[in-house]
Image 1: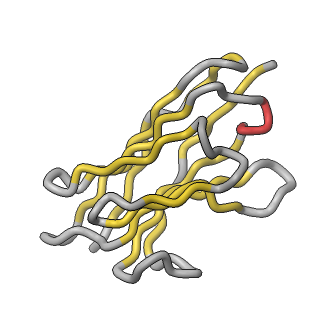
Image 2 (image 1 turned 45 degrees about the vertical axis):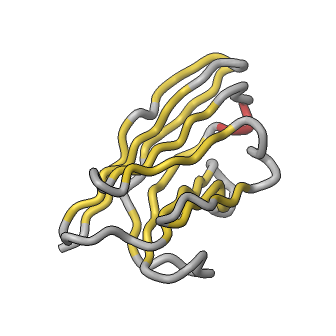
Length: 119
């Protein structure tokens, strides 16, 4: 059974940094695309970033230049480095994975980890 488990969320002041990790388990080969979504209270879930197995990445405009997505295929791990955090980055961040290239809807989802940015 495939599992995605996020870690690294927490409380940080505006302008600070935080790193999230996602551990994938349940199969011997990695996913083609992995990524992050987030959902703030009262708002719709939104795409944050995604990365292909080969390292190509995409970012939402709201985080471009501040967030960095990376992955370690050998360890089935994915990371999100977040710098210059803003209060509007406050949300539950969920790890996603799929065997397709940048799918419109991801097959596998983690439970999410809370990121809170105080002003």
